[in-house]
Length: 119
Image (cartoon, rainbow, N blue to C red; front, top):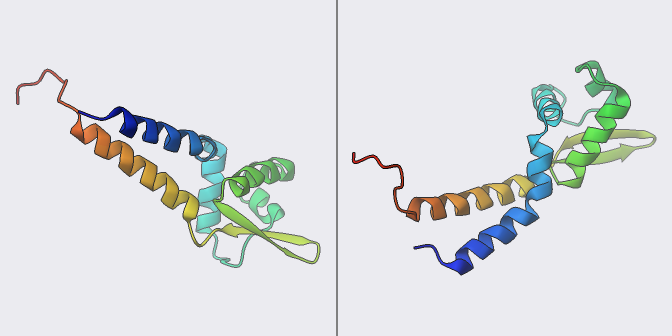
């Protein structure tokens, strides 16, 4: 049986991961992440470069990059007047999300089988 304390802990973890889950759940941001991953330029990409590789406007790309930056998926480096976006090499946000999902999995695997199957 799962303790109330364990469920409360998972509840808090999910609440603190909500923005990250929302950011990653958006199809446009998923596409931007994939476009950035496929780039040969590991020093970072500018908004114009990303916009050219997608069907998005520069303001739309900027908006989505800001959301990804706010949740810790990407970072931004400024060189003069140019901004370069790249992945956060520590991947702390992704590690945090993996930890929450692993916690949820541990809880789920302790629950009794309710499928009704006798196999």
